Image (cartoon, helix red, strand yellow):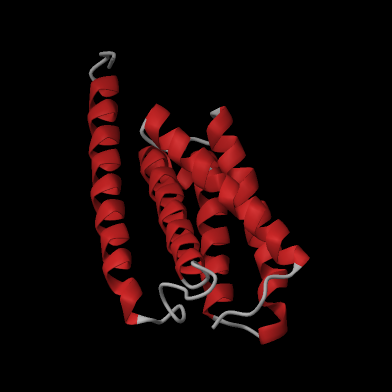
Length: 171
């Protein structure tokens, strides 16, 4: 059973819920999370803040899988943010950026659902812990949504890139 949430834990949770909304809004509005947009910048900022505060939540238990996933999320966020500025990536930069931000959103969804379902309802949570088999169907559904969503985004980028090369505008 999870431990009681500290005041700092509540702050971390509040900060970490924000990118769920910003990311979902960006995906619905633009079809991807673009740090050049207002929602994309808010997503990036709140994700970085959530990652930073997360390190203090896990600090008392030593290095854990949560730390490893948080480091992976930070690497994805920074790579996605700087991809357009890396000349080596060339025309692959938008694909790298989209893949990084979509993957970070997927990992956030895994974190959020795991935390929620191992704590709610308070009297008898849905799952006893993060490794509970009850979470497998949800994680598979998230993985399927991520893979199909990322595939759609990359195909859309490819189509837009092809139209741009031909000198045409997309709608």
